[in-house]
Image (cartoon, rainbow, N blue to C red; front, side):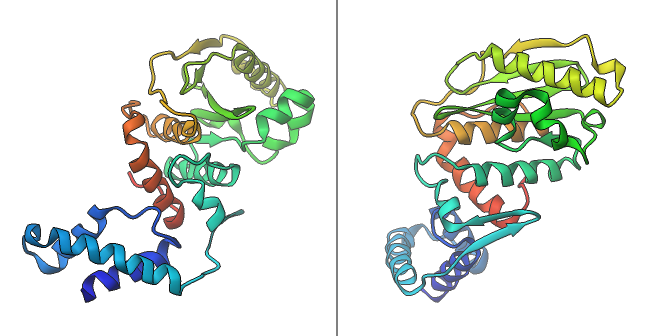
Length: 259
C-alpha cells in the first residue's frame, strides 16, 4: 500500500489533481518497483487507489498553477481538459507554445484572439502581432478559428504555398481561408517577400478525424496542430479523446510535448 500512496501523493503534487490519472499509470509504477505479476492483486489495487485518492483530495487544497514563459495556467484552466468540458483559451495558447518549442519554432502558432482581431479590424488591427516574428522563415503557420462555440483550424504551408481548413464537424468556412490568404499576401508585401505574394492554393480537408459530441472540438484542434507540426498523419478518432485529454494535461504540467 505504501508504494501506491507514495505514487498518488507525488502525482497529485505534480499535476494538481487526478484528472490525468489512469489505472495504467499506477500499475506501470508498481510493476516497475515490484517487478512481478500483479494480476491477482488488481481488485485490491483498484480499491486502494480509489480510497486514497479521496483521502488526498480531502486533505489538500493547493493553489496549483503552471507557468511557462508568458503563460500561466490555474487548476480551473486545466480542469477544462476533464471529461467533455470545452477547453479554454489559456490551455490552447500554452499548448501552442509547446508545439512551437517542440519543432524549434519552425511552426508558428497564432494566439486564439488573432483571427477575431483580423476579422473585425483587418490587417492594420494585427499588423504589430508579428513585430518580432518573421513568418516567412517558418514552414507552417497554425491559426485557431473560433466561431461562436466551435473551434476550427486554418494552417498555412509555406513550403507548398497552400492554405488548409480543418474542422472536426466537417464544416467549411471559406471566408476564414480567404481572410488568412489576404493577411499572408499583405504581410508578404509589408515585409518585402515578393515570392509569397502570389501562387497560393486554398484547400479544404474533408477526410479527417471527426468528433461525435459537442465538447471535444478544442481537443481535436490541438491534436490537429500537434500532428501537423510534427508531420504526422491524423490517425486518431473520437474514442481516443479521453486518453488525449489526459496526455495534454500532463504535457502542459511538464511544459513539453511527449513525442
